Image (spheres, rainbow, N blue to C red):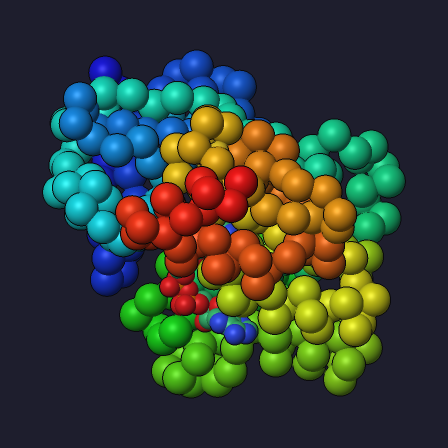
Length: 281
Ligand code: NAD
Ligand code: FES
């Protein structure tokens, strides 16, 4: 069993938990994910690791209520436990294996949307711990839905917050901040990492393509069982077929076919849609 040490509501429908999982905490790197299962009847839920502490043997996960399983998960309290926490799974973010001296000369821009702020945090923190301060844009629908602000501020070089409704800092979507930084302020970046809802990643990529800014995205949202077995996370990257859970979750965003991935994601939600996808494959 994997004991929950802390359970906190971050915002409406968004929860954070610190979970005792020493083997995962010892081995994980930014970009990797775990699969959690509450009990015998619980669904397997893939979640990007938001933080880890190798010394205390704990990992932090952040999740949003999107259905019955995550609703049940949100009811867990400190002292309760998960039956399973499997991981670390997937591949670490590309920069983890790069030469630190080369990395120090790269200017990185992170773009986090909504709950996608959680998977961005360990990447920015890792860079900060290695002496690299990245710029970070965080977008949320409104001030109440903004998460991990203080944690992100502590590790980001510059933090740019924007809200869709203008209820905090500035009004507008993350793409408008990218345009401001690059086109108005003349900032130059070597790579952008965008993690958030699919529609955000699609529009960030359309813009960064125009700006000639290489962009990495995380295709975690299309995963279902996270094991390479269900086929849900199949996507086209360039002219290759990939599986987000096995080959990713991070990919070159300029090569991802977002429209196809979003269509599959919608179809996968219904039994009829899943049957249809099976027929097509
Ligand atoms: P949201 O809908 O509140 O959007 C967050 C921000 O994304 C917005 O504030 C805006 O700045 C930006 N955005 C949204 N649509 C945009 C568009 N068309 N153009 C430009 N920018 C746009 O986000 P949410 O409700 O917190 O997101 C939930 C989604 O995030 C879920 O679908 C979940 O699957 C996904 N998610 C993704 C990852 C990942 O690894 N990619 C991780 C966690 C959650
Ligand atoms: Fe099922 Fe990748 S999530 S195959």
